[in-house]
Length: 207
Ligand SMILES: N[C@@H](CCC(=O)N[C@@H](CS)C(=O)NCC(=O)O)C(=O)O
Image (cartoon, rainbow, N blue to C red):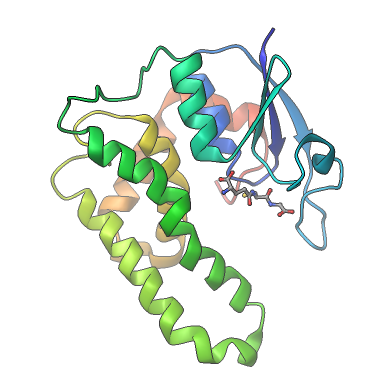
């Protein structure tokens, strides 16, 4: 029975399709479209998971939410730990940190920025703090690529798949300020598995 990805267009769910393509796993996509006005997920997603968000993975009746948890689950239960450094490897801690930094840290200023940008002048009191936090997190990501081409080290890993989304946002927001992130995003998009996932997933950002 193939894995099922409950996939929302233009969303972080794209990373799960990409991981499945990297691992050459059999999967099926159940598609959900964002509302044209609110940009929110449709109500049907709540029938799959109470938060009504994507991605959600379904594996033989088991429901798994949260991108990082889904990535860990797929790598461990279906991926033979490919794309995961060995625990004794020097890159393992960096791998773990970035696997979780992507959603646990980087998304906070990104989402605050998105929401306050819709407030107009009412968002001004928060502007300086959000800008400072965006720059702090994006620069930390940029610096992480100074010694190695990938977030965990010299080898591509599942943490790069998780980091691709905040890296894409950093490049869209910060442009030339983050040349290493731009090169990283280009390298991600050049991977055949990313391109296959992009074809199967449908609309994704501006890419
Ligand atoms: N931390 C969660 C975030 C899930 C999430 O917020 N997904 C967004 C798409 S990027 C979503 O479904 N938004 C639609 C909505 O909130 O209605 C994860 O990584 O899985």
